[in-house]
Image (cartoon, rainbow, N blue to C red; front, side):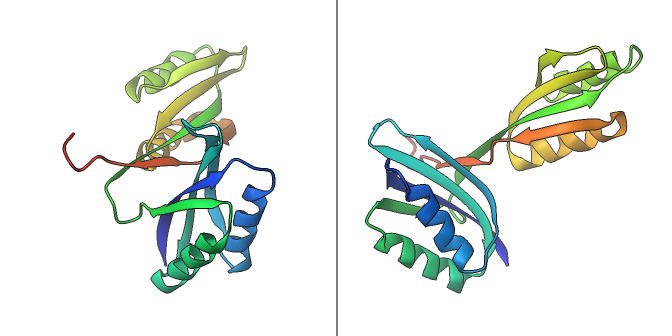
Length: 162
């Protein structure tokens, strides 16, 4: 099974998120990531849904989503050129000795220090999945205490050159 990214434009109404996530879960697929937010049009929201599935099942899910009255459009970004990003907050254990080392790691990947505690640093990073994975691997030896992630958001690239 391959990872798929669907960008679904929906009417900004109560219950739409529940209907769409239930439809996907009802097909036996775990949603890896789901992010929803209002668009440039306040009456519409964009859902970015990441999950595993084969081509046949993805086509079935897209057909069923298209039947929902609240769905305006569906774009399968899986095979299109696209940008995707995720925000992560990561609380890392630090000592007086390791604080500069962790701060240097943050600077290396362009993460920001979001909060400073006596025994921890909370770092914020926005990046693609590979960058976030590398970031977490670099921090693992220091003791990751807590992680919060937004889920991926994605947009198709403008391939027309303008």
